[in-house]
Length: 168
Image (cartoon, rainbow, N blue to C red; front, side, top):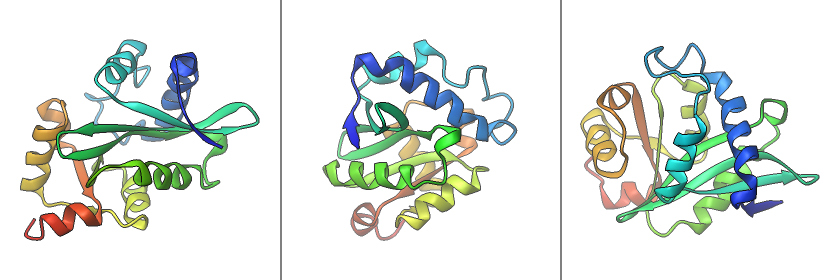
């Protein structure tokens, strides 16, 4: 079952993100990695900025989460993680499909450039990586991330965004 998460889910969201992020250890540049990967204060800040988490629940426990954040004229998919024990079961695909249906307008996703499995996952769902100049513009327009993260990230765009921006 997919449902909107609420404040009582905060600890589960925190646990899922930091468990799922273990796959990025050694992939994310060491100067961008922290332990935990997303501290509680950072998660609370993201939620305060409008990231709404949706969860895939199995037997009353969240197995995966994905955030949705409307920003200006696009919707961002943020912080998509599945518990290590629940990966490779289609949970991320179900969450992504659900959130895309809820999105109003084009959808953009940012991830780490060296996380090839994450990029392939989004590509299987009809997202395409944008060019370097456009990536920089998009990350500076729609996200609040440091320059070092911009250097080491990619942005993927859905078909609606690509239709509106065919030259990029």
